[in-house]
Length: 464
Image 1 (cartoon, rainbow, N blue to C red):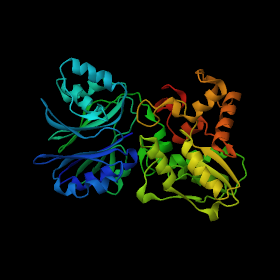
Image 2: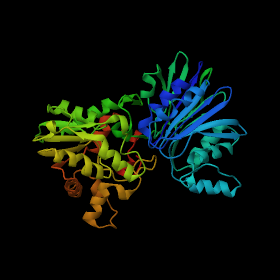
Image 3: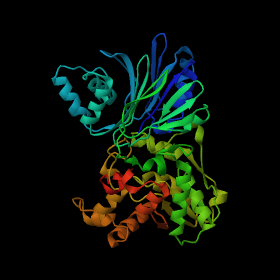
Image 4: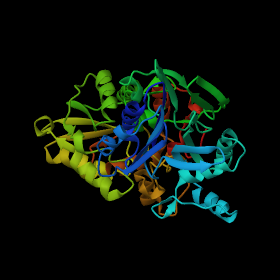
């Protein structure tokens, strides 16, 4: 999952662009980029896989000057890209996942199109999006053509010399929000990027809606769709606690989630803890509801390490998981611990690093309470879960039923014997005292949006 940010301002926008983009750093780990339109078009892209966004751009942004800019934290492709076209020169950045990039790129190659941006030996999906747009008569028609052709999702910012086209994907998998201050507008995936820069939320862009943000204000170019299936995982894990999507704050949802976990639980324990950082809000809610004290047996060394879930390479994920969490033996030793986690994806880091540290520090019991149901399907709309084989719930089913078993309907039923057997297998595999997942209806209730307006594909395998 990537994060995008844009600014249209009466004054120079580069400072807001730098910090606003940086507030999306939790959304990707591979590339960072900024483009600014002033007297000329400036663009810089850097590999940020081993360094923080600010450290790469802090000096360069001072050399950039302009009133319009876009920035991106990318999970895969170098971006934003600069495109020379019949529409003039524009910059483009996108967040999401285009599943059929290779197929669409091949079709364009056969029609005589060329590609210059290659990412790890493959086509750059952002360049593909740009090429599709330029094949139409207008930018708006081009963006609509992208949505007609791609499988997956693409939320994008397209910057011309006059302003920014902000387009949210048709089913609203990712949020896109416009902020306003006295000097102009910002647009972002994460509203936490507005707060310290003085922007107030002006508009939540609707699924499929295209808004042009110019010096004269906002102009709706294409009306949004009624159908909305925003990613539920944004509130559970991906999003930042200070952000709000569809007007609903992330941290409040996590507290409600923890309360609902506690209401269905009766385990005896000495303390409640969250796996830093995204598990902490869930743990606070659990402690509030249960009356069991919230404590921090694991602390995160924030300065040097990002999210272990985000990097594409397993060895990097393992290194981050190993190094970022430091146990506090004095809090752990001899205690029964309820450990709230946002989710269990592969389970390897939870088992090999988190739980291992707790057991080695003298924990008496460890009761794991994930804030969402077992993940059963890889995400089709962002680079998060990447394959079925990675999912610990699927590995449990295959161990129980055999590798060729694919009829998992009973395992989706939280009251079935097969579901309980799967959870027991996972608990044993992790080395936990007990394991109890959040129920799907409780997760939906914690978010507070009607079930049909949420993308639940990771859990159910389809969009309701």
